[in-house]
Image (cartoon, rainbow, N blue to C red; front, side):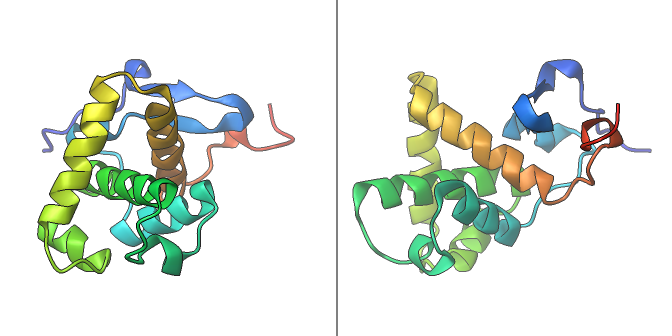
Length: 143
């Protein structure tokens, strides 16, 4: 018997085009499958139109840093892995980089930054789409 709760309507939002957005923190207490860190990175590359090499680089241009921080935050929230493991996959030698990114994005969300909230939502949805099979209700040509 599992102590995990099913997803509720309050934790899911249907976006245009049949994309389902789930709050990342909801995954921590549900039976919903979790994406791998690699799947989050792949989704970030697609959502932010970045190459994997670019996202995992040490470049420090502001937009790239923010995209990398969002990817690290979403990986932490959705994958349920430790900071050191996420750091290894992101090719960082120290877990505190992931800790800083997670805290920074949480602070921006708490401050109500719409751009950050939108990007976290889009990345979370894209990462979740990598592990969930398409629902027949949202497939084209079906009703």
